[in-house]
Length: 172
Image (tube, rainbow, N blue to C red; front, side, top):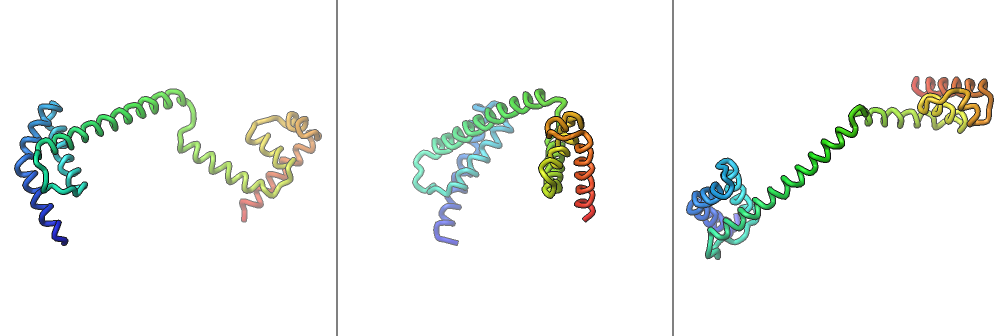
């Protein structure tokens, strides 16, 4: 323990003992809520403890305490304002996304798509495209045939080839 520690501890003990009651009363009048006043008074002393500033040279301890407490009140008001804005935006987002997938469902879908993409890497471009168009984009075999400029029968062969490849890849 350094020589500064006992001096600081003594100074904070004196500051707390002599001024906590006054600070609590001042905050209770200012905040009009004894619970918030008690929390803010405690937070004020925690902030002072955390700062480890020298308390020895303080001429006006009540001004020092009230300034620290005011800053805490302002910080809390700012955080509350940001939190309220965030919650409002979140509520709007939830309303806008009603009927859509939850974040968990989206994650599960993305993981499945990654797995499918990994399995499909070994296929030729046309086979892979036919699989994606049919199973993910829900296109008909006729639409896929036109798009790939092949026959419907070839599309069926591509789909069968893709399914067999997926089956083999998943059996490993």
